[in-house]
Length: 202
Image 1 (tube, one colour):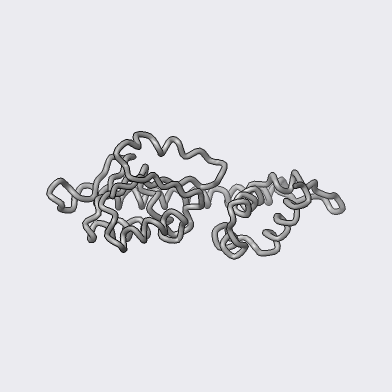
Image 2 (cartoon, rainbow, N blue to C red; image 1 turned 45 degrees about the vertical axis):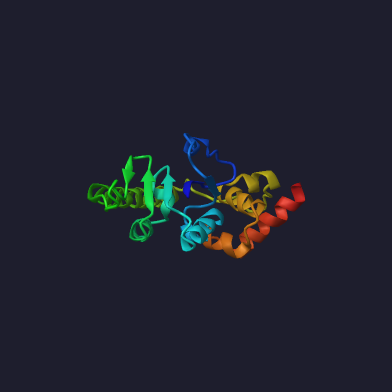
């Protein structure tokens, strides 16, 4: 069976960019969740795992390598796992394939996967560090401040905050508070407040 697997980070994102040229596939799977969730724990990822365990999957196509995992180790482990099972992995961006026409591992693709996965993880870490550095500088200059004491934040403004918006999207998608806390690294009290606020503006 030949599957095209795609993932976007939230329900509001459009996955059509990853779903080009779908002719010839038996199924097109789309997960709408954070890449922090391991592949086999995602809704469609779990379906993929069942197909693998029952020897139904022969060919898996992905848009980019970061669709396979949340870190370099995850990507490499999944790549090796499927390669050892003889399942063809075809990556569109960049154009890579784990097994050649003779069914043997493609050494160039393995090298590129390792390099690209490492670069992706490094880039995400650098972005995070730059954000923390920016906040630290802003606090030093007295720019980064919270809400004034005694002021009340509107429900709309509260829900429009990036993290709260993400929480709301996951709640709307049916994720539990425990799952959201793990994915977004936020407290249960924050999730409960978002849930309460959502009910108030509904």
